[in-house]
Amino acid sequence: MAELATIARPYAEALFKASSSDLAATAAWVEALAAIAANPQLQQFAGNPNSSSQQVFDVITGVGNSALPAEAKNFLRTVIDNGRLSVLPEIAAQFRALKNAQSGTSEAVIQSAFPIEGSILNDVKAVLEKRFGRKLEVSVEIAPELIGGIRVVVGDEVLDTSVKARLEQMKVALTA
Image (cartoon, rainbow, N blue to C red; front, side, top):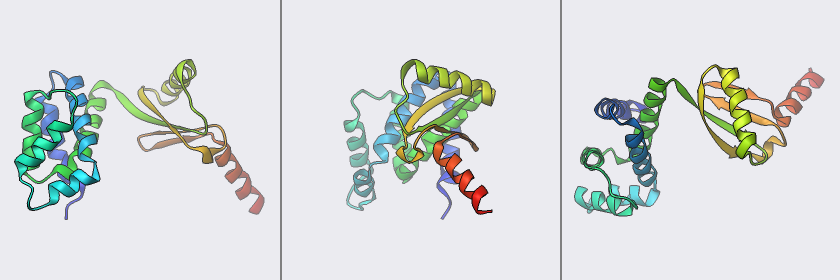
């Protein structure tokens, strides 16, 4: 079977081309639909042969708190009718990557042993943007195993200044 990324790519590219006038609004509803579609119980319901496409569509549109625009409903119906509901989170990820590439930004995941908020997060973001040479959309994950410091992942680049990484470096140096 083809990989999820291969299946998701045409959907993400088509959605990107169709929504080039309002990428922010499209990104918002595609992320919301992806979060709903990632639910294992919904996946089980959608995979049940006794569930019709209309029932799956009604469940998903009923879960969302806000009314979906017509484009979102059409896109969702296409995804469901083609049996690709399980690929929706990957479609959202690829759409986000296309949107970021157009705007010249990248996603950065900051892993920290402690919460980072407010002005400290803004300061860290500014330093990281200078270090990586591009605008960053940052998100913070708590990772107590780092002990201290931060670990930043931007695409395939990793900047690890954590205490755990330094201890590992010391261990390698001492055992060599």
